[in-house]
Length: 450
Image 1 (cartoon, rainbow, N blue to C red):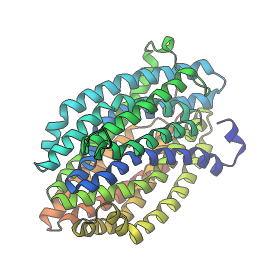
Image 2 (cartoon, rainbow, N blue to C red):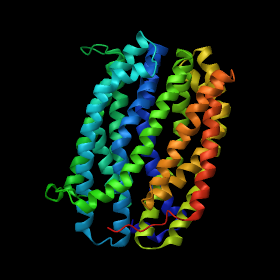
Image 3 (tube, one colour):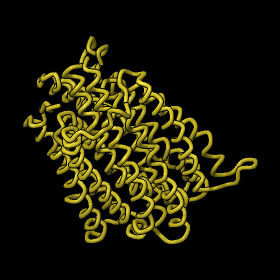
Image 4 (cartoon, rainbow, N blue to C red):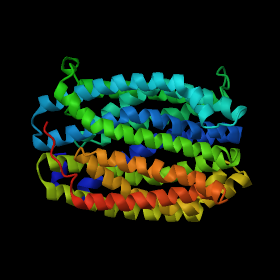
């Protein structure tokens, strides 16, 4: 962070955000790689990672929200006094302990709730249900390993180092790409595990990345160090983590449950629409990466500026982030409209899937542009630790708008699957407008008492 301060505001934001974008992109590659290889087994197999993503996101966010809170606290502490190494190490240790506990809870809840959730989501019986059950169960056993990576990102990004987590992620994804086809299709003495093989490959890759993350974090090689001796819970710190993390976790988890309900509506239209929805979401998620990366970069720099009590600087960071994100995402969505059909064919050359996927893009491309502005605004609120408005907007976006519209438009108005795509557009447009209005009021510009 110190070396960045000699740069312009835009350069600072991009030097932090671009590695985060790349790291998020690599995280998305886990499911993308699985989708590519499982597509060779048919549309029932390719539905497994799509359905799993919605359910796992619902449960994971209970833990990731505390990682977000940790980044906010560390960045503000660094902005207030970067030389106070003992305070930074203490916060890193507390964040590690919280995430360790949350990862265990996530794993247990996920494993025990997998089958009931699949039934609730109306996942078609037969191969689609069996494949998804296998894939999802193994995926939840990887959760403690995934949270190990989250802790490294939380601590290092809080002090402005977004490159080291990227390198760790690159190793993990490379391993996953290398062994995924081997575990799915078999090779030599290794049998073909098919859908379960994709999940086992992810588990092995995350084992390696988690091990590397822990060595870096506990070794203190990057300017901040987690220590066992600093892990005794402190009431003030845990209270602040809870104050920031709980509203965020509730908002995100309830939203993710909403996504799962929407997935249930999608499932009612059959395997072709399920596959189109899954592939389409993954294609567009690639273009979400700039917005998400810039949002996280905005949160880090806003936290630093607010920690230094520079409110005007924090506001400048946020406006700059919105401008850059808007440019990135508009170009990306134009490419999706022009070439999305061919990308769908790359994954599954099924005319019915291609038809529904292309139809989806015409509605969701402008929706993603709205979502990009919304994400950057959320980054500003996160940097100030103001997560209650974020919770409210997330809940309204899904449960106040998208879920009811996803039922009403396809069924009551006879729009079929097009109604789901239209619901996505309307929910993002309304909440993006609302978020910019809240941002302009300035209530997010808060310096935490650390």
